[in-house]
Length: 116
Image 1 (cartoon, rainbow, N blue to C red):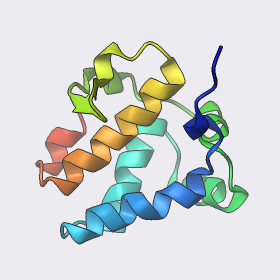
Image 2 (cartoon, one colour):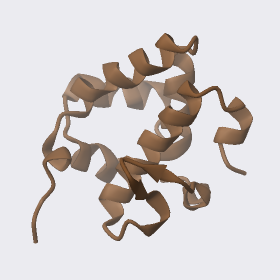
Image 3 (cartoon, rainbow, N blue to C red):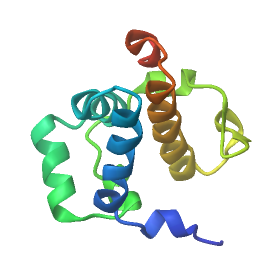
């Protein structure tokens, strides 16, 4: 099976891009962190520890305390592919995160981003 390059990319190297994308649209780092915590179950301290460890995406998601079951309610297109149709679970979780950050940057109501 082909391993995608993003699986081995450092989460801590991509994280600043998530923050920058949000801040460029008037959102905050704390909102980005809140969405990541909502998705993964990390505490703020746990998230900061992951960033310090410089783990890759695969490890970041593998060590997530509790992936939010409501993430399956995230629908739509990211990178030209419908997130709900992605078969690889790790790739799907990565794209869920991309979709959350994209919705934040587009100004979607914050509480609506976190599906209930």
